Length: 428
Image 1 (cartoon, rainbow, N blue to C red):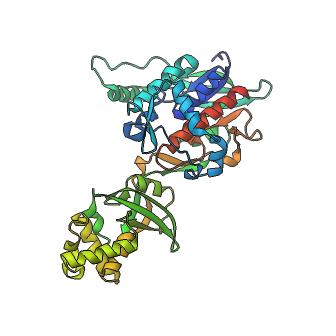
Image 2 (image 1 turned 30 degrees about the horizontal axis):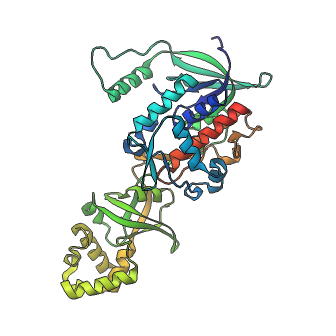
Image 3 (image 1 turned 60 degrees about the vertical axis):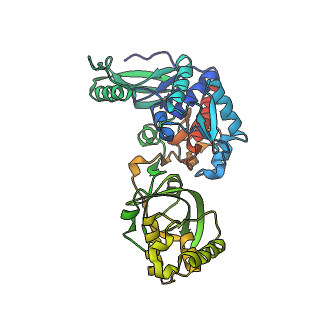
């Protein structure tokens, strides 16, 4: 197993942050190798934004991140301008929708294609390569890496014509059973950019690691006043606002579309809630976020003079206000609350419809993970691992313990932290 020429920078992971780091290092004059264990680089990008790729946000507020001060230090004073310049350098035309940035094509494959078109001449891409061992050579000031790669080309599917997804499945099956051979690589600096499954890579380099847990997923909860209602509400969408109440005190709220599911609440606002919720918390759904409680009580009082008394009409009183199943739930909850069905009591309930949180749900669909390499092991803002832990090592993207709300914030972190780590690795 002979060693090839040494690289200035090796990037472990060919997703968004890894490709950004590779491009940044290469544009700073470094020779770069990208080590990607999947059959192609950039594949996770295709799943972002439901295939549309929410690239970033028009206002990258550090407070939307798990560690605001870290985000502020790493992303800098004008992150929006830096990302705009980066996208321009890829030849990627972008557009804005409600503060969210997308490729003009609204297609994630446009983003991946632009990245790979820029990365291909700038860096060597080693796909189907699994990092097996890593050791630092102090006299050489470099990392010796051992990769396991297929011993030969992966077999093609024969005469069958496959679309992209079919070809991807075929190649992954072939990769899983392909015999391997080892390849030795030396790199002066290594950037860990392996996404939200960084435990094994951190272990290879002897780094501390926080266990990953899924976030940005639905919230498991039950209605406090009508426990069986979710079966009837399943699939119903409402424009509302969710508030998180802990110890009787509201600690967070956000408006948005809420989707009822048999296990709880889903939708983007529920995904953002999943980053904060704990089992035992109360989640309050505001069904009329555009109206204050007093204004809503007045509306309900006037309505009772038009359509009749809510006490007498029950669920039918909400016809024209709420979907039938939701009106039935509110009516049942009002009856069980003990507060009655007076307009003021109904208004309060509709502004604070309570659910008991049990945690998160459908974690397999989670958009990101929380956990990774902790920031007390990282020198900021350069994103270098502390020299006493591992010299010549950097990390970026989801490999670090950083997550953020929906809306392009997580992908913005991937781009910006990758750009920062790549430039630092090239100049270190």
